[in-house]
Length: 559
Image (cartoon, rainbow, N blue to C red; front, side, top):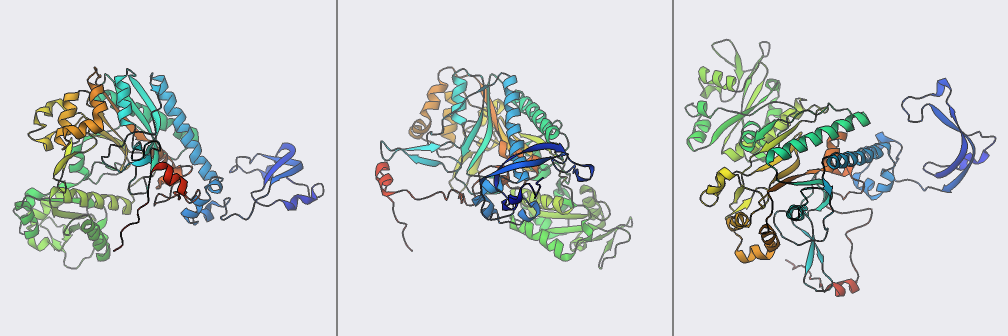
């Protein structure tokens, strides 16, 4: 509080000036108190002040959160040091700092040792592209920035550090999405002499403890997290159409292939006869959708590979619909395919989809992969449109028993579904060469609200098994030795059984703060194309650096 008579130059102060203020902290008068402010009970009676640094005209109004919601994101990132002055941004950084502190405390209490692993490492390209760094002393050689500390943490297990963790920076040169950045932070964990259940129990306990503590500490608008349900990969694909199910709502997929194979609708019948599937998902209340709304749903199905989408709407008694078909039990349906189906078939389909009056059943007839992809996308869309995705819920689950490998038809070879150090299940080991697609892995993901939060596995610790995996994915012995000889040699020195997991710290904060973009929970993120407009990077280097590094720029060929 300034007294204009005692401090006539107070008008010199502009928004965002940096000040040194001397005065008395006093209680506000009753009429001036504001419970919505952190300082709502007190004020400072200013006796003097000094302007430490003036502020120019800001590019956006940091004190007005409503106005800031309309500011271009790239402009905010360019002036991130100003964007961070917003209370909402400070809140995100505070939640993040507390999360890291609690993760460390939890793992320290369990006897884990925090170990830093190198940032400069070896390029072993598989999966995402590496970021590479030239080695100045010998042109033509390169370091790589780690996509994860995977190999180092396994080597720590060989070294006898039986419980390791690290707040690890990771780097992947891949397409940017709302939940991805070229550099990100994960809590990386590895343990020796354990089984899959040991890791799942530990990470579940850690997650519940840390997240519930954060909800209490910051008063976050979230329900407390409870025990995680578990699904096998096959179950998740069958029930939800993907391996990252959003469990905030039901709407499980259902299969009517047995009904469709003998029905009069040729699209359904022909699909099943050709080895495909007819599967569906329910849209609660969707029978009232307009033709345009249904067309938009069909377009989503087509965008993800389906040839089309069929629907059956079960009408409420009071609903009027031209061309509705009445069933023997008095129920009425609206559907362009009803004329090809018997009343008994329609009733069986409604039962399979657990349709209630007012619901719409949506169907895709195609191969397994397409039906999974299209219907899972429809399910997510329906969950949002029907208001079923409760923002208070953090619906975690485990997905386990992934296939070890998947076939890359374009390259005509098997490749790891997760990574090449994942242990096949002991019961499937005999099928490794004869039927690789049937081999399951000791592999597991943690999913939250339809997004992968973490992934891990029991690792290979024997050189003979690791060599078999290299053979399976098409690595010659020379290539395997060149890229991973250090791992094979380490495994030959009595490496213990071990496994681990890594979960994303950035994504954890996204869950807690209801942010849909990972950039909002990082102090200094990159924009969607991987650029940093604040530092103006990446940037050119001067001629001397090109020479020192033994590099030469080659102009791309012109068309």
